[in-house]
Length: 224
Ligand SMILES: Cc1cc2nc3c(=O)[nH]c(=O)nc-3n(C[C@H](O)[C@H](O)[C@H](O)COP(=O)(O)O)c2cc1C
Image 1 (cartoon, helix red, strand yellow):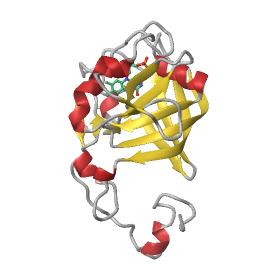
Image 2 (cartoon, rainbow, N blue to C red):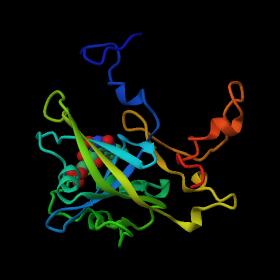
Image 3 (cartoon, rainbow, N blue to C red):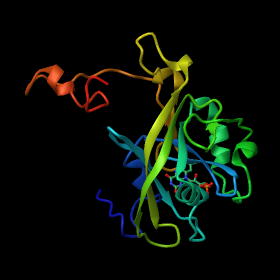
Image 4 (spheres, rainbow, N blue to C red):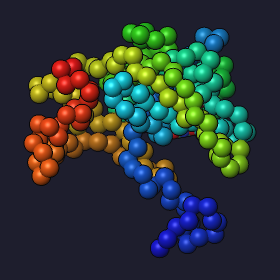
């Protein structure tokens, strides 16, 4: 079949769009309002954009009432945010923080999550999240959309520091993703988690593996 995203009344009963780009990592985004109220919410339209410097993006739709979500407002007003990884065992807490709480509510408290002082930014870090990217806001790209919540603010930020729980650094000196079991979003109400990791090295068909690895390892300066 061919599915046309802009047409209605097609064969599939449920819109498949979010199943076409999976799995999506979930950023558990911690911010703080200009009045000092902590906020926490999950965002799966989330990715790193480049690695040197390390920019990340979160794509935040408007609410059904056409207003911008608390996370967007807080980031633009205060200039800082933290993107935490959600381990599988914290799925239920993550889900609570997705509720449309009033902006006066501290969502850490609502979900029973302890707030930890961050290393480089004012928004709190999340106790139990094994990897947390502390970011400084760079810019917003606002894309017009349909209806009240189609319009989206793509928030871009630069990582200032990254907390990594030592308990999840393996004997090979790499982050032990399979042990963290990061939660990820599929389409509909479906989720998955990563518990299998395998390596594929670059092909040596066009150049040496060493040359092909340059730039793939995470910094333009290979001495870093
Ligand atoms: C797993 C998950 C992923 C989500 N991803 C997004 C997303 O990428 N963009 C978005 O606008 N809302 C997303 N949401 C919905 C927000 O988390 C929800 O609207 C939340 O109430 C926003 O809170 P805030 O107003 O405190 O920022 C997601 C919800 C869940 C459960």
